[in-house]
Image 1 (tube, rainbow, N blue to C red):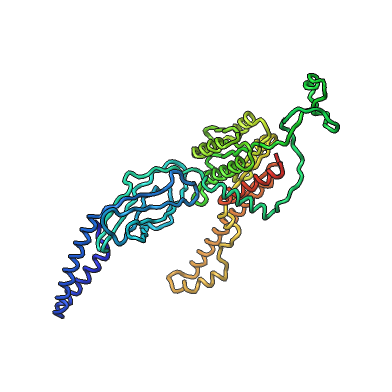
Image 2: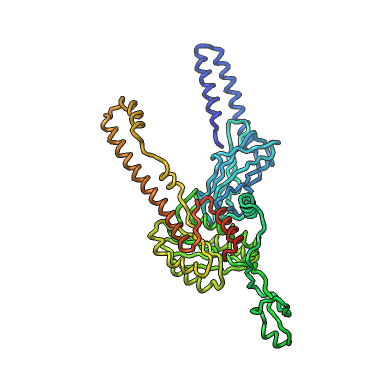
Length: 467
């Protein structure tokens, strides 16, 4: 049992009336009556709360989306007793963020079934144990009782965002149709897949003659090919230290994982492509060969779920060797990495060229919105603002000289920060230009828009048959 704030307010009011009874006798009698009623109400409230029995718990999915709002509910039903109001405190791990306040009010229409809708934002993948749901019920509003729902907790797994993949895919495709229009155009055929052997007719390309079949049948036979439908797409994710920077509560690696899963879904379900996943870091490389079908999507999601942080610099040279050994046909490769400066690019450019010589390579290099804001906005105080701020400060013990000294020092510090931010932003642009000059696609985008941006790039390259 817990005593509510209303209990002390009423008790203080009765004590005040009783104190005033020293001057007015009638008030003392009123105070005694109110005290008796207060004691009776407290006793009744205690009995009602002791007899209360409820059943319920937390209704939440066993698999949650990373970086998405996951909605769930907490409800209970009164089996015995009666209550006037209730609120719940849900114990969740520190990796989860909840928009609601600590005390969530329970709503009811019939005073028998109480429920509340909540939402949590998950910023880390893995297996978690949700704690208890603590219900605080009150009958007359003087006391409240704590009832524990699901005392053993509940286990959940946080996977890369998977529940709204179809919706996101349709949204991106509809946006591209609106922006570019939906028109048909004839593209050069890439006839590399064998379909059948048939007899030669006038006009067929003599280079497609099958001499073995011709010798066996006695008639001129040619190979018939069809356009290549199933292409290979590989998502390569850097698991090094550079990918652990946080944007909107999610690391750069997690943003890349969500984008990879969305592209994999679109390529497997909508385009019937073969999709694979590769992760590389200081400790080694994990490669899932490209395949088609729904079982491949489940394998991709499990591999993305299991990716972990590896502290150190990733070995790009070893990645080149793995790709040369395992990727036998031209593929579209999305490489999610962080290239902070042009000097880092100069060390890795030769390996990017090596991968790009046999594949269509897209380097995904994320931008930093805070750096851009710092570089564009003028944060320093100019002289006019200083003179305006200087009037109320004259009443303080600081002299005008001290204010000017602080102003100059602060302005100098802000100018240095702004200059450094501009230099880093310019380096990002120089990196993108250098990659484009070497025949490598570069997608410079903010992390929060990465999923939609990478899917749009895939649809664009697919339409152009870039690989």
